[in-house]
Amino acid sequence: MPHCVILGSMTEHLTRLAPSPTGALHLGNARTFVLNHLLARQQGWRMLLRVEDLDGPRVKPGSAADMLEELAWLGLTWEQPAVYQSQRAHFYRQALEALVAKGLAYPCVCSRKDAQQAGSAPHDDESAAAYPGTCRGRFATADQAAATGRPIAWRVCTDGQTIVVDDQFAGRREFDLGRIGGDFVIFKSDGLAAYQLAVVVDDAQAGVDRIVRGEDLLESAARQIHLRRLLGLGETVRYWHLPLVVGPDGRRLAKRHGDTRLSHYRRLGATPQQVLGLIGFWSGLLPTRQEADLAELLRRFDLQLLPLQPVTFLPADEKFLMGQ
Image (cartoon, rainbow, N blue to C red; front, side, top):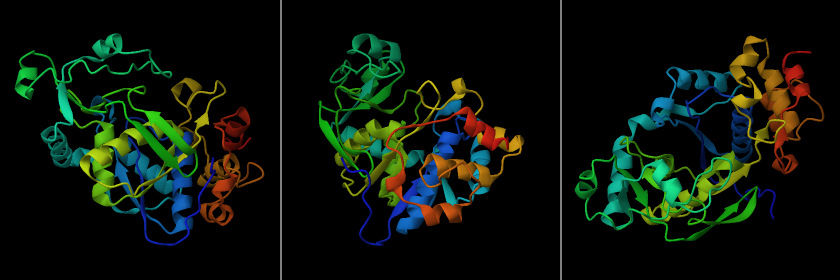
């Protein structure tokens, strides 16, 4: 499978940094954002920043401002102003209405527990089950669904389609939408757009056609391609899904691995050059853990050097950040 495809022209393209303020920026997030920045600068893409702040109670006050400050601390830049999903509800509602009008989305009153119990075998470490379509065709109108007295979410029809993601780093991948979750939620019962619909609408309206993010979102790419097709948005987007930073247990870097937030290491005295140097080392751009700035990483940047497997955050990495 292809490891990387270098674009043959400098035609103007647009990518985005898309932090979610449900927690602090950690080292794994930072690596993906830095690599996105480097690839964009190498290829001559424009860069925007979108704050994905739709996750209701999980959004932490002040977290968005902190994340933007930390990205700037690393030297990352983007076109102003930043876009906030919480200010774009009208556009998501329009997209939902378009899908409903075409008979491609339907109201669902199943709880998460209902869906898991009725679905097929769970997959991955989140034990999410494929939704069996319990509410598809059950209600002629949203009012009928509301008459049940249960909260209403909206799901999009998938019809067991297989979606091919021709990823520029991870290679060609096929996803059976029925197996990886079935008809998925595009509007939640709290009245907010779900992640999959929001990012499709945002990317299409902004003209984003180059997406660089973690490989844990490969399945999301399949769902988003499906939504783009249903909404008639074209298929101009190219994806780069990059290996994650994981803990010693092989799982995605998270709280279970201790405090890996940028803010934590900054309080301990870590500099941007140390963080960038570690990211450069993890990404095959530097032979050892050593201080570096973005300019040096850009001079050395070659996505073909990036390891194909996840990178493990080791005690030696932490010692480097702490100047030991």
